[in-house]
Amino acid sequence: MTTVADKLARKSSHKTTAKQVRLRLVYIDFWSAVKLSFLAAVAIAIVTVVAFFLMFLVVQTTGLISTVDEFFQSLSDGGVSLTSFIGLPQVMAFASIVAILNLVVVTVMGAVIAGIYNLAVKITGGLLVGFTSN
Image 1 (spheres, helix red, strand yellow):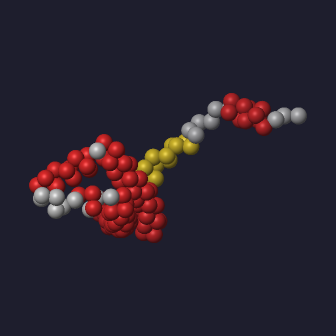
Image 2 (cartoon, one colour):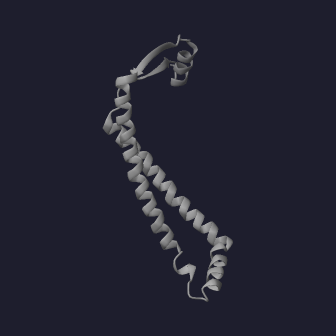
Image 3 (cartoon, helix red, strand yellow):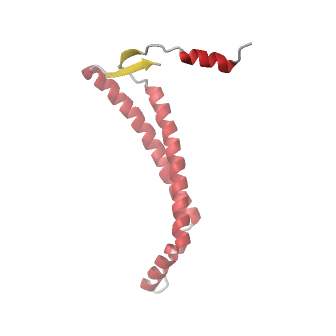
């Protein structure tokens, strides 16, 4: 009785010739581009929020916020406190706003780039891509 590993070993020992195919990309589906750019934008939004959180933790741990706060209080005779404006809730709210704006911009840019490519294909004939079957 042969096992799956034996079958795979026999299959991999046969060398097949790689066939090369050249195809021309002449159309990018609009909704596919929108969906893909939206997924990329979601990933960028998550990275943005996490990066803002980590940067805030590093700045707070190093004591930079308290040092700058002391500087502003010395300039304004104690009237302005920077820590009342810069806290974790404010930083995360700003990060969320930036992430949502990036989400919209990246999604729209993906759609615009797909549209521009589809218009440019009419002039240039498309992108020639080579594939091999291994």
